[in-house]
Image 1 (cartoon, rainbow, N blue to C red):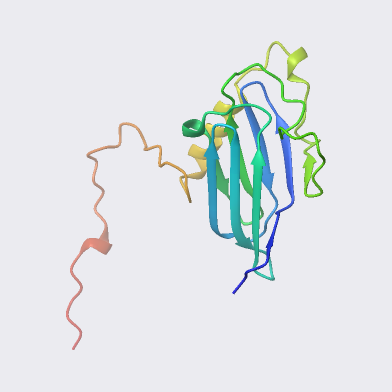
Image 2: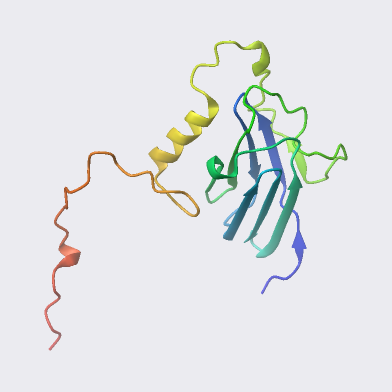
Length: 165
């Protein structure tokens, strides 16, 4: 059983209405993400050694915890923090200017959106769309299929099994 706590390696990037942080933990289990107005708490067990990871972040600015989400995959846990004030750039992820060994910038996804007046679909909407196409999972609200209610599909799993002899 894992007891050793170490921070998970993470990358982050800034968008007009959200901040994304990806915790790079493969095969994570027991993922817990707690969004607070100015804080993010992440913990999970993961990797080959089943290490227990925990990251606590005092955020640079406020977020909307109710609208922030995360998605677990086999390779990482991606969190989308909905900014309380959209359109305000975050020069860094944390309130503290100190450098964290485990935290880096995700240069593949970084862009200077401030100069980019025509950022088509907001990144938060893109994230929500991605969530919908991937289906709900740990900690994700199931966003429903709109208009599918009441269309109960017959499922052979619902039939009574014949008694075994």
